Image (cartoon, rainbow, N blue to C red; front, side):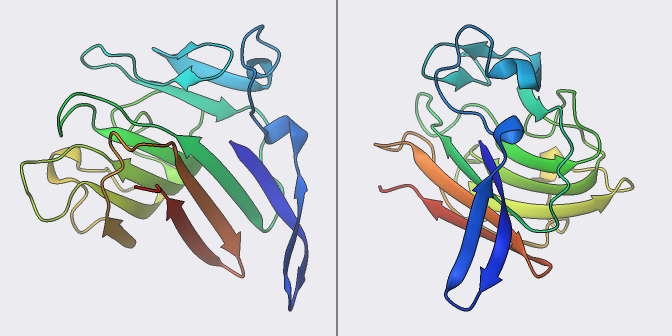
Length: 190
């Protein structure tokens, strides 16, 4: 997880500056990296990876930044791998930009009511159901209660059908917020 902000938006592109207190990179052992973050749930980590959901039923975990983002424009780069036998397994994972940080929950590892943005990577294949596996974005002012059983149908502002389970290489996702526009880019190099 790398949180960066635009220090300059110019015609030729965006200049980024890294925020070290909100960046998480390997190695993870020794606790130095993770001490800047609040970790909850069934999280396991080694030197090279953080496992949010071990291969146990009903596992959930979360890593939350302890420091609030103060940048008006920002970009986050995520690298993750979703594994499991067959087409089914865990529900998925999420990137949260929300006030209700610091707890694990039933919605892709986070709370089912939140204030802010959730980018959801639904990795559960409901046997050919038309709207998943998918990547979705949802905004909430705290009143929305995400309906996991309906895969959030009618609750997200945008999304696409994409299966990121068992890819040959880790998935790279970039989430950018500039000029009040959210942009999600994905490279799963299948």
